Every structure is written in C-alpha cells, then in structure tokens.
Image (cartoon, rainbow, N blue to C red; front, side):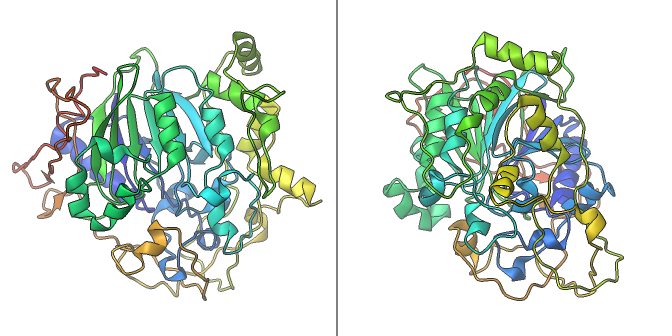
Length: 500
C-alpha cells in the first residue's frame, strides 16, 4: 500500500491532492491513502473561522469547505489528526473520531484505526503543561483562553493510548516527541532553524507525553509536523526495534511537505477504515475516567485502590464485537451539521462563534459503546442543550468583502504566535480566500515541487547505528514533460522493505 504523508495542511486540500496527482502521473504509481499530521483547518464556513486560534487577519477559508459541501470529493481516502490551527468547534463534535467530509476521516482526540491491515494510531493537538492534567472542559463559544486550551492534549488520551498492546505500524502526532533530535542530523536542523538551538539543548523542543508514547508503543513509523521543517531520525528501542521518525513541512511552494512510502498490507483486505477492536474496548472500559472540569483529573496509578490497567481482555473485546455484530467497518455516516460556505450568497451579517452542535456520528458511537460525549456532559452539568443545527438557524454569508492575500501566512513576523501558542486578542474579523501559489500540476508548468517519493527498492543501509546522523537530501520532482529531476531524500530510511 502506497501512503502519502502530509505535514501541516493549513486548509490547502486542493493543492495537496493536485500535487499527489502530478506525482502519480510522473512516477506511474497510485497513492492509496493520505495521512495528515494536523493544522488541517476544517473550516466549513466563516463562523468556524472565528473558532480558530489565529489572528483575525489570517482568517482564511482555503478549500476544505468544498469537500464538506460535496462540491468536490476527496480523490484519496484521507485520515487526519488535529493540530493547533483548527476549527476546534467542528472537531469537538467528533471527540472519538468520524468523517469531517466524505472520504476524509478525523481520528478524534486520540485514536487507533485499521486500514487494509495497517494499524494507525494518532493523537491530536499540542502539549501545554498547564492544561495537561485537566478535563475536556472547553465549549463553544470560546474565549481567548479556551480557544487555545481546547487543542491542548490531556493525560486521559495518553493513558488510553498506553493501554494498547498490539503493535502499531504508523503513529501520527502534531508535536514532535522530545529528544528525537538526538537521533538525526541535529546540526543541519539547527542550521535551518537556528532558533531551535536553545530549546534542543534544554530538552524543551517537542512534547514529553509524545516521547513517553514513542517509548511505550514503539511504532514502526512516527510522523509529525508543527515546526515547519523536514527532519528524519531513527529511534532505537530496548527490544531492538527501531522507529523511523519523520517530521514534515507545511504546504507551500518549494517546501518539503509530502512523503510517499510503501507499507506492506493485507492484500485480501479492502483499503477502507475499520475500527480497532482494542481501541474501542479501551474507550468503553475507561469511560469513567473522562472529566469535563477545568480541574486536575488524575489517572489511576499502580498504588491506586481502583483498576489501573485497562489492557483489553478477550472477554471485554468479545463484548465490543457483539455490539458491532462482528463488523468493524467504520460506517460511512457523514452528515453536515452546519451549512457550508456559499460563495454566491449576498447576505451580510455580523459573524459570531456558533454554539455547540451534536454530531450524529458521535451519538451513534456513544450509544453503541455506552460511553459519554464530553460536550453533552458539559451541557447537562450546566442544564443546557445542544444548539439547534445551523442548517436550519443560519443563512450563508457574503464573500463580497473578500481580500486576496498571499497565503504564506507564517513567513511573517507573526510566526511566533502560531508556533508558540501565543494568545492574540481578537479584532474585527475579515475573511479572505486563499490564493496559495503552489505550481499547478500541469505539463506546461515551469515550476518545481519539493516533495518526496518512495524508491522502488533500496538496500538495508538504514539499519545503521542509531546514534549516527541520518543523511538528509532534497528531492525535486519536475512536472515538465520528459524532464524529471530527482535528488533522492531519506532514500535509505524510507525504503520499500520493512526490516524493522
């Protein structure tokens, strides 16, 4: 199975899919699955933009709404995790995962799924020490604090992922795990990003909970984004296995934002998303640990009087199988819960954050597993109900005040407000439409894509000593006819063989 991995998407789905299409034509391959490592920006309309933790001047609808509305259909089965630039109100509708658009699947706060026999795990958001021990207390409409804390990972998700016992093939996170820089070309990274040096030396670059997961789960592959650069590493484990780590850049011209690689899979299985039996069992057995309060929510430890190990038993897994009638296929039950953006609408109203909406996908799964929807718990505790669907309450809004602007958002002096999760006070909003100038994948293009492809074969030289630097080279793919140019990048790590 050929899998494409994207770093920070920043809403540019059309450009990502077009780039993959160009690559498929040039290399004569077929990509089966796209994995996105956060900052996906699932903005359905202008109200969703108000729920994103970015300065108002960066309110940009980009192209996701076209796939949500059905104007376009994703050409590749797509799986994503959340980052720190998301329409958090929409993702909160799907805490345990679900379809954000046809053929585009969100993994939830954390999750494990199975695609064609390949086990994929992931965790959404970024680490912030002050919020890590809290419950999922945030609810829309957000203030300037909760607009950011809503995407901070919690100890509950880390605890749940640590209960997984079956080997994970691929893991996705937005943050890098701390200390992965020890196992790659650290010097080259610092030359490219000099401001990383102090954090690397002080062991502050990345997420400690993700490092903990890396050492516990020991996946074959781990992909991250967030820091807007490409970095490869080989992380050894005590059981003599190795995790192949790769961080990718954001979707912009001449940036290394895409990697394609081969993963062995069960050829008898259709390439579709299936629930992971272990994960559903863990969700069921740990439901009582869910908190929706902004207070410390401690997980049970080895000296606790209550159960502290939730590694699924066969009996517990059989209960889940019975509930699912032995069918682990994720149902294609996507529904719109808000009206999508309408470029032709002429209505002009003051846009505000929407209230919390109930997603039928979450309702279905919660009833099936007898687990709680965090948003529903918050509303019940406050004697409130879900908002009525915007499909019936709201009209679409005008794009007459659209401002065209370069979408290279983070190449400005505002970049620290994106990377470091800085609080920025809101000001009167102004929505714009993206005109991201990635080169179009046409045969008459004179521009180059900076992307990565999978070599058809490679030697086993990636099994070097883990302390050695990983060679990092650029790869350039030209879309000009009969003029392909390749400089193989990470050739030795991302070979088609799986020798780990």
